[in-house]
Amino acid sequence: MSSSISTIAIGVENLNSALDLWVGTFDLELVKKITGLDENLTTLWGIDPDNIRAQALVRTPGVEIGQLHFVEFKIPNDPVRKDANSTDLGPKNLDVTCKDLPKKYDELQQMGYSFRSKYIEYRLEKLQADVIEVQMPGHDETNIVFMEWLEEKIKLSAKGYGGITSLVVIVPDTIREGRFYSDLFNLKETLHEELFGEHIEKMIGLPQGGGLDLRLLSGDEKDRYGTVEIISYVGASNQVNRFKLASPPALGVLHCSFLTNSMKAFIKNAKTIGVDLTHFGDLKLIYGNGPVCSLRSPAGLRIDVQEKTSRKY
Image 1 (cartoon, helix red, strand yellow):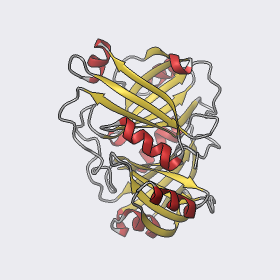
Image 2 (cartoon, one colour):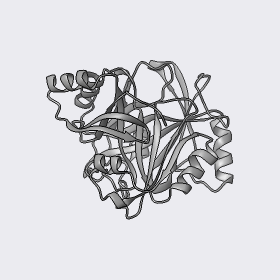
Image 3 (tube, helix red, strand yellow):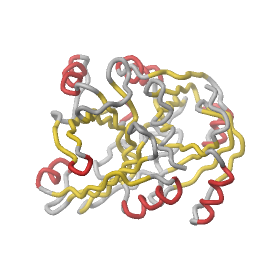
Image 4 (cartoon, one colour):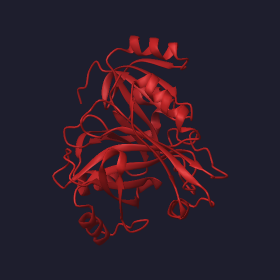
């Protein structure tokens, strides 16, 4: 396997409100929307069959990695990141790429959206990329991070948005977590940064001497969609572990899924490196049909893997 994240599952209280943002405002592609019972999905998630009200699959137009799978529950649990600290462990950010970020910042503010701060500009020396970034609180206590890599050529919607470039996950150990993604999914580490300094301490809320360790892991795709960004915070205390909270029918970011061309080969590799799998057999899901298995990363993120036998939407 050398493909990035196929789909990210997000529990929502109101599907139409989520689609207003991602499809209406960002102009991402609505691949499919369905309502009512989905026995295959409830089997995969182990929840009450009556608790799924509606779901939708959304993506950057024509891009089959970094897709968003929204699921509206009849009786949801609390959001995964309700009352969370910035350093809590678990899935955290949804990175959205865009063009002309300063202009979009003004446009979104005029539409009534708020941001956690003014956008900032910095340079990723190892990637030779100049970046503009800003964070916006999203629906269901998600955190949306807009990032523009200046002069980058990447597929976007007609309105200049694309997502998801990275699923950002806070973990206790990026070395162990990174090795897991490399060994099991053949992802490559495309960036490793250790960031320290007073501005980092203030931005994140860390004590003096604190900082962060960041690793970016990607598949072979040309575009940056569907990458895994893992972060650990140095000096953070009282980190709540929210991985167990990130289970359906919770609201917010729940887990991600990958595709494999051969489930048999994937199972063999997982067994070789000691990864425990839960098998579900053939399932017909909104994002594809085929055998599915589930596992947990060392930190605790749930990951589903589906054999790429049919991608009929």
